[in-house]
Length: 125
Image (cartoon, rainbow, N blue to C red; front, side, top):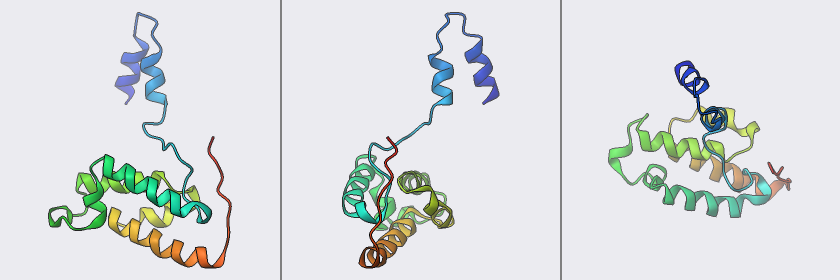
């Protein structure tokens, strides 16, 4: 990473887009993080995003070739799921070793919490 920063700072054209790109987040979601009051729409959007990224097979568990922990598709799908939840939930979800387990955990928690509490989502914009 330091070598990339050095190369970017040595840019003689005065173009700061290289260093700006390094300092910006690599990914962000275009929708509000998951909370109890938006779980229906969040689930639809997240599933669509994962399908578009060709990662749904890592979540649905049907592809037996993707069962090894650490498989790139599993890690990418899990990363998308973690990016889509509020910070308070990430610690628990990070401990799970697959995107499928994260998805199933969220389903169970949301099924339970939507019956008991109403919460508001905090918009990141």
